[in-house]
Image (tube, rainbow, N blue to C red; front, side, top):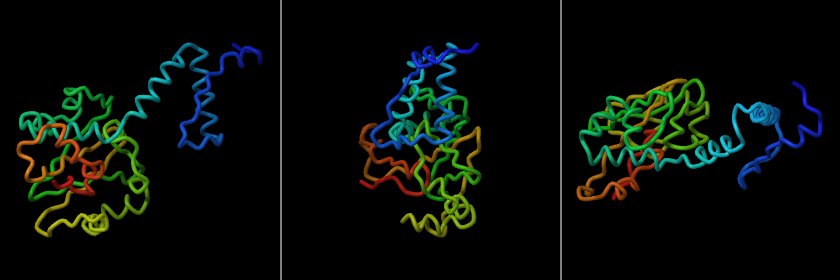
Length: 212
């Protein structure tokens, strides 16, 4: 069904850009706007639905993943459930990872894990927020697979030669999360205190958890 010009203008739902967002109208941004407005006009979604989704995405940050890691450090049974099924473990503490399969891997004294996406930039955004630019770069995506020890050293993370490095390649329907080693001297710390030691980079595997 067609709409006259006045009707179209009456139903445009504008969302102002965030202060840090470039508001240049690119081809893809124009397409996104057109599709969004069409879905709203057809009643498939509402402007409030879109706004809530945007707010949810803006609220995604590494604090979510850190909550999972801190819980695993404190609760051995939870950690085992998390290693067995990361998606269910996330839901268990109120974190929605959607239809994606979340695989959790643990750093130990003999194994260090690191995450990459060799094809594009698949990344656990629901737990870590937006990926850093270096994660999406061709340099990181290609070299981490070929020479992980050298790349980690460039991040300042020197892995001893007797520790194996396992590189995990994310896919379109599967994401990885690294549980870094718990720093020493934190035996009596609370979950909130432990979570502050867990960084985005340590859950990607390019860094260690912050020391006490």
